[in-house]
Amino acid sequence: MRYRIDPISGNKLSVLGFGCMRFPRSRNKIDLGKSEQLLLEAIDRGVNYFDTAYVYGGSEEAVGEILFRNKVRDRIFLATKLPHQNCKESSDFDSLFETQLERLKTDRIDYYLIHNIATTEAWQRLCSLGIEQWIEQKKAAGRIGRIGFSFHGAQKDYLDLLDAYDWEFTQIQYNYMDENYQAGRAGLQKAHAKGLPVIIMEPLLGGKLAHGLPATAEHIFKGIDPHMTPASWALRWLFNQPEVTVVLSGMNSPEQLLDNLETAEAVGVGDLKHQEVFPLVKKAIEESYKVPCTGCNYCMPCPNGVNIPGCFSAYNKSFAMGFMAGIQQYLTSTGMTSPAENHAASRCTRCGACEKKCPQNIPISSELKAVAKRMEPFWLSAALKIFMKLR
Image (cartoon, rainbow, N blue to C red; front, top):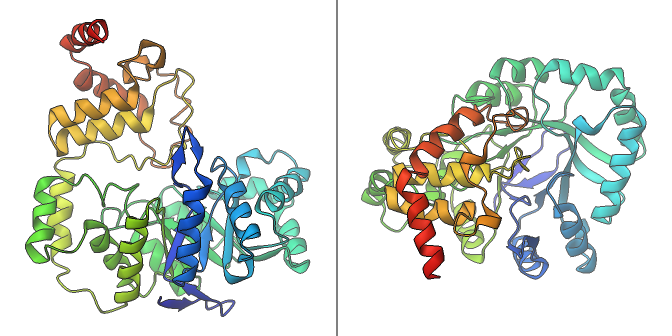
């Protein structure tokens, strides 16, 4: 494993970090056995940065149990996040933090983030509740090692936030499709210039840069190296940049873990060849994907039962890999073959609840209308009735 130095603490952080939002699941619950195998294999191969959050349903509990029962807590740096929207008064900082320590079965958080601060106004609201004093108290007591923030918002706000506090690290969405989106390259470079470790999330754009690429994009990659996976290309693009400290990947299978480990072990700054391939691939992807949804699920649950990420994923697939491939996925992800489990886009009432929570600032209501128009054609209802009758 290759490591990069946190210039503030001197910690050696593995260039590949484990994002714990997308653990393997069984019956809508985290599969603890499979997750444990993945985490332990990652640790044995040198991964030492693990990222979770209060709002990643069941993730903190799973990570805590795995680390505790295998006695490996001291071999890693643990990161989690404060859900600042839940903080209405100063006492909420302690109650949420103590809950996280209990879930994670630990007495400290090595890298603690304010989760998804998107504006200086949001930070000032927390300051009015006394968060700066609270942070200093926790750091002095050894309960928090390093303090930072994660970000989904406009680039200008990110640049302002970097100057709003003496942060010790930061976490941004960044990949070859998002080079100028959200914090972007300008944000990455400013954070690095300030001496901050930069943690990268969504390096594969919610898996879309690993699986389901348009055939034209895959063909471009394969034309250069038929054995390298699209995921490896995406990670190499990041590992080649000296401003990047850790790249988080939400690995949920042994195959994904192995591929990412091999890439992290093989590639460093200056090792990337054929950089000219990325503009070509980006153009091919942009010509096919219609909605920039990463599948983060922040918009969920929908008050009306719409499976928003599932709808967008199938919709994009219908352009990238063919209409029928998209329809097949749409029927599966929305449960339209079972009326009691219908989570289709047409159920959207345009209430707007989802749009307030979307870190990509997607106009979800209007996009769902487009999804329903394409993915629920007039003949689909009749075909489903016949299917269910035959079944």
